[in-house]
Image 1 (tube, rainbow over the protein chains, first blue to last red):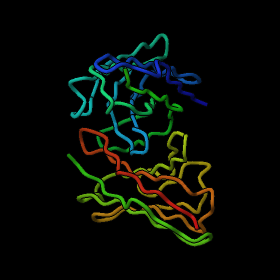
Image 2: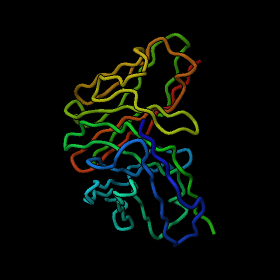
Image 3: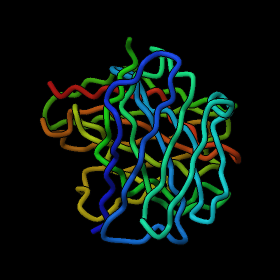
Image 4: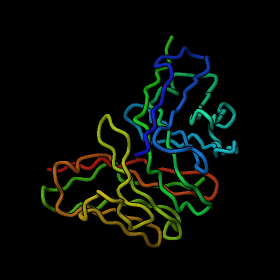
Length: 121
Length: 106
C-alpha cells in the first residue's frame, strides 16, 4: 500500500518561502507524476502543479511565477517551494502520486493526508 | 482556462437518491473524476473516467457524462455519504477542479 506523507513548517511569515517535502513509502516514485494540491480553509481544491520523476514540470499558470518543484528519486521524495507567501496562501497542502497522459485518463488515487500551512507574522 | 461549475449544496433524504452535477463546456468529451472529502480528511476517489468505481467504493455510487454535464449519483444515501464532492478534469494543459458540492443527508 503506497503511502505519502507531507512534512514542513506549519507556520510561515509573510514574504518568506514555503518548503514542503512529500515522502513516498510502499512504492516508487519512478515513472510517476507527483502533484501538489492545496485547499484554503473552507474552500475548494486548487492544483498547484506536477513534476515527473525525471524532473519535467508543469505548473498552474496562476502560481507559476512563485512555484518550484523538485524530486529526489533515491530518497523517494519530492518537494514544493512557494515564494513570496501571503495570507492567501494559508491552506492545507496535499501531495499526490499518479499516472498521467494528455487525456486526463488517470485519476489521483494516492494522496497524502495533507499538512496545514498558515501564513502569519 | 476551463471552468467547472458545481452546485454549492445538495440535500437528500436518508435512503433516497442524490445527484451532483458538474457543468463544463463539452465536458462529455473529457474524462471526469470525482472525489469525496470528509471534514479533516484528504479527498478519496469515488468515480474515475466518468463511470468507473474504484475497489472499495459501494455500488451505490455511479457516474455519467454527456454533453455539457457530468453527474455523480448516490443511491440509497446514508449518513456516511455526507461530504464535499469535487469533479476534476484535465483541460489539455492543467488539472481543473470544480468548486465542490456539500452533500447533506437529512
